[in-house]
Amino acid sequence: MSQLIDPSSSGAVVVTKSDTIDIVYPSGIKRSKGIYVGVTGDLNLVLASGVTVLFKAVAAGVVHPISVKRVMSASTTATDIVALY
Image (cartoon, rainbow, N blue to C red; front, side, top):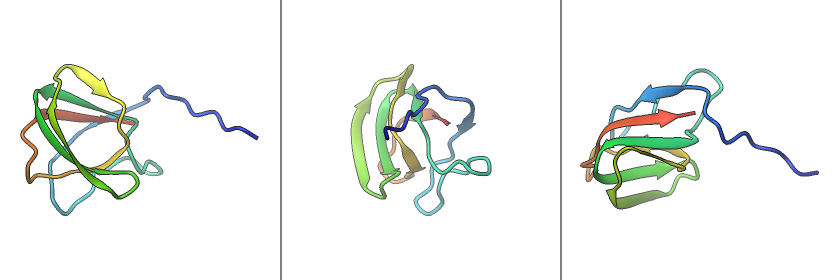
């Protein structure tokens, strides 16, 4: 049986970059549905799968459909980051 996933967001949290602490979501939420970047730059992310990846020159003013556990402080130059869940 197929499973339907609602792609829309029901909430958001301002992201504090950290190399050791995951994004703090409300109870029951483990990862984002998207990441908004206010100021263009690089995003060093720990994805929901646990893989770390560096996205270079991420566009500002856009919600990027990435499932994220953590935004790393090291190598992240983008700012005004919001995680949507």
